[in-house]
Image (tube, rainbow, N blue to C red; front, side, top):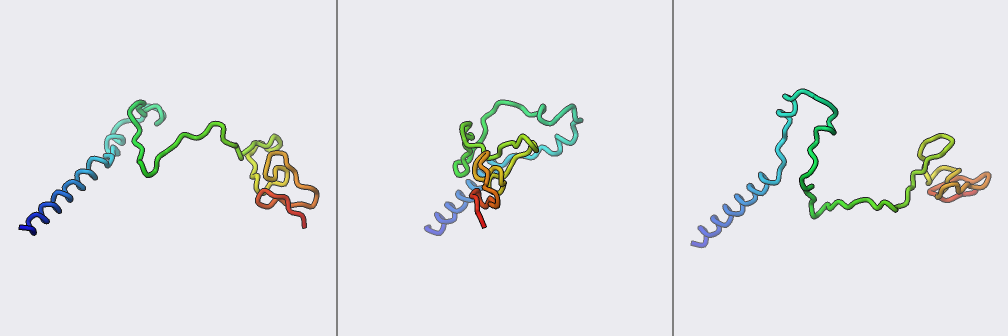
Amino acid sequence: MIKMIKITMLTIIAVTMALTLILTTKPSNHELHDAQPATGPAFLDRKTGGAKRVSRFLQEKEKNPRAADHCHKDNDIGQCVNLAYDKRHCGACNHRCMPGGYCIYGMCDYA
């Protein structure tokens, strides 16, 4: 009798796990997408609306708009600078190292 209960419980658990995997996986639409002709850019084909599924374990948060921007554009070269190694922007914008100094990990080092 106990053996029959164990087999029944294992069967119920296995079926529950299989249903969970089937219902949570996203079906691929590669066949449907390849058959349709391209009418424009891919971002125009996306449908807006619908709730975005978020995992509890890897919950996504919106970025803070007031967060520090560590990639400042340099007016001379028009590219982002590395605040850890750039001699003219060592650790902060427009913080220059003294002559003979090197910027290492955002701190001026003098040899």
